[in-house]
Every structure is written in C-alpha cells, then in structure tokens.
Length: 149
Image (cartoon, rainbow, N blue to C red; front, side):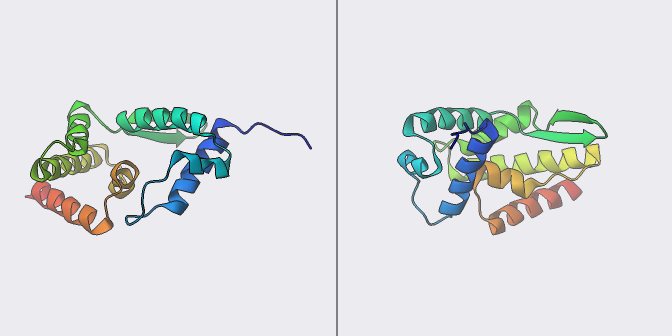
C-alpha cells in the first residue's frame, strides 16, 4: 500500500471538519493533541495554528469567478480592519466591543449597497467570531435601521 502525502487543502479540510464536528458554544477548547486522530501531529498543529491566526487577522477576501477568470477582492478596508481588531480586543469594555461590531456591520452593509452585491455577513461573523445567530441578527438589524434612517 502506497502512503500518499495529503495536500494542504486535504489537511486544512480535515482540521476544520474536526473542529466543526467537535465544537459548539458549550464545549471546551480542543487540545491540539486531539488532532492526531485526523493525522495532524501536535508540532504540525502548532504551524497550522500560526497560519490560521495569520489568515484570521488579514482582510476578509471575496473570490469571484467570471467565466475563465478568477478575481480576488478585499472586503475590508483600514476602517473595517480597525473595527474588527477593536471587537476582538478583550481588554476593551463590552460596550466598546459591541459598538465596534455595529460599526463593522454598517460598513459591510454600505459596501453591499455600493457594490450592488450581496455580502453574507452571518458567515463572515461566524468564521471570525462564532457569535450566536440571534446576536448577529439583532446587531445587523440595528446597523441596517441606522443606515436606512
């Protein structure tokens, strides 16, 4: 039997599938040693964690396929990046963090209007922050009502 090395995409898919299957809002964090069950050693997991943290700190990207061409567009600008960092800063008060998230939503909704394209805010927030749906809906509705008024 030939032991074929998995591609980066296959390994990333295994990591995120394992995380998705083994987490919800009530579970404890997953020790990196548990990723051995999907073929990722603790040392390799350290590298993956660094890569994941780097990617999460980068601007949100949108990939568009138009015919044979693929375009990569940034959804974030300096303002939204700052709001994202403020929201993630646990040293800030709850009110400051919620305000930053509201401003981030407003900016995304404004981009959506300007570009004339739907932006899936819920999936962006879930990818970055794992906030429950009722909170996302409440804050997004606040942002939308403020933009509309």
